[in-house]
Image (cartoon, rainbow over all chains, first blue to last red):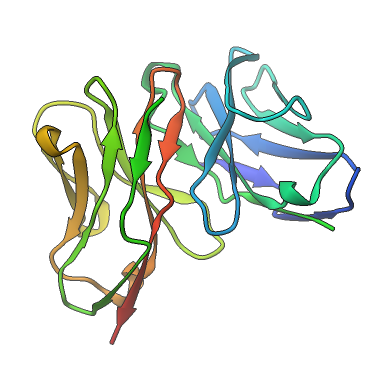
Length: 113
Length: 112
């Protein structure tokens, strides 16, 4: 049973650039959440997607956007990158009926220089 | 909005000794509570969860946690620590708006 997968593993970008991160949920899961984890901190909720729509959003600017595809996979896009966007980006999947029981992928380490 | 507090930033424990990690939350209703573990450079692995019922919950890797409503706590315990338990541990609470709110984490170091 494949777990949550994310790509790429690592990414280095320059300030002002745009980045797209990808996530495939655990088999059978239909809900995807994205979290940002800065160094030494706990994960912070960015947003959650269900039925290809953004269901809930955390306290992140509009530079952060996402998408969910019909096969439940998801993308996180960040525009106009800032140095402060450097972090580990975690994707978590769940079932809509058990939305709090979230299973996390290994994350994408984004470094902005 | 609710919050999660993990009072201990770093704990060092000897291999074979017991471990207890503290977690306090602020939330009006009965919360959904979780403990996750994160090894260096890895994602988060769910150790255990509490939704309702028995306040003592068992998890993977020999961990257990106890929900105490009167103290707004959900402390994680393990009777005998192994060197492989060295990691970062996060307590999390499920909020009404579908998201998980995490504490800042506790780093556990295991000494031989």
